[in-house]
Length: 271
Image (cartoon, rainbow, N blue to C red; front, side):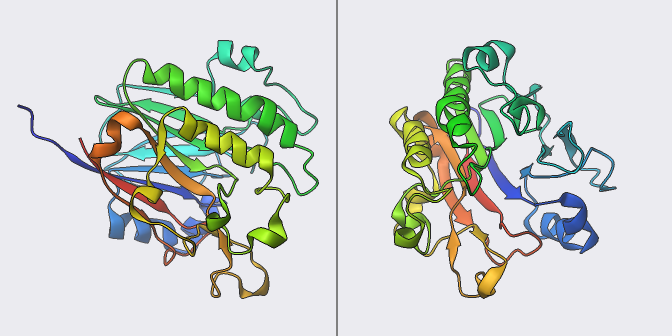
């Protein structure tokens, strides 16, 4: 029988990797937590621009065509078998993902899928619905259903782990002030239903396996000392196929890690 491996996976919306690196907070984070795999969102850079030297890691980047915008990356110690950026063409076409007035979300560097021996890993930076909800229909009718379809497609081959900034607080427990924010971007019925569809399709919100209730947040506004007062939102998640539920040994949020308006989240897999 093959010995099981313990793998630590982290996800962090860095809100500009060059800025976090310049403050000396990126390498110190990697050094302290030593992720086996680190997924990043909102890198706002092309590979090489941040001048990060991490020889132990292979780097895979998906940068937006628009400079200094969105973007994802995976830094990984185990070598993936295969890596793909963005949706396969047939899914993008089926869900009519194209230019919506802001841009084409399939050209914004929003997703990377990496195949490993025992699972697929997908990192995603879900489009923000915008304060005036002008991108809500893109989210609700196109992006969220396309993303779920892609994860289910990958799952036919092997279990899936997906993570990132989903730009939604799923339940009232996932933000400090649910009543005041009802219907605001990030807490509309449509966005919450999009997330619920992942769970209804058999994926597991790993953090809720270990922690119930409120007070656990991953993003804080820069205003009114929100982070120090923990007036935040849980927007960053790790989900896994039901088949991996028993392999998830821990799920955590690291609010003490500074450098971005988001903090890292992670899971420990024994697989």
